[in-house]
Length: 150
Image (cartoon, rainbow, N blue to C red; front, top):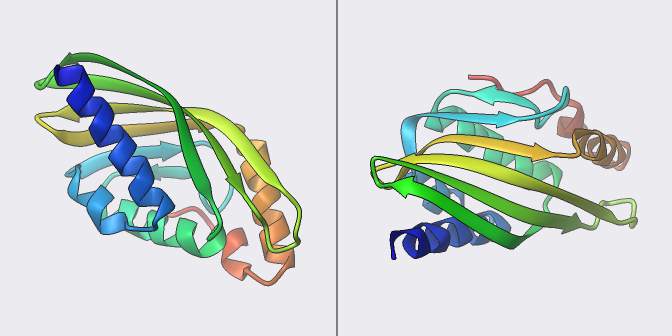
């Protein structure tokens, strides 16, 4: 029963990202959340606060506004005092150059008492870097900005 609740929470969080409703997602996070996204690019790096994560999500929405995430599987382990959820997903989008974008990955989310305390995003970071370069060539300069690490 608890695993189903956590799965619903994870699905709701991904739906919030698709709607760019980051306030809903951030309310699910501990103030001292650790968010790690691989790669040396505008979306890479590690954030250690909910405020840093808010800035990161806002950037994500600006540099890849067409991004859509589709969950394929969710696995949940543990109880409310320490829950680990593994979410396997596919992301798609239409860059400004009209081409296609697709990526696959997993998020490993640690939760304590209903709040996410750690999110590790694992995907093809080279595909993300290539997408950001393409977006920058079409005028989104922020796509080449340094990572947000707070």
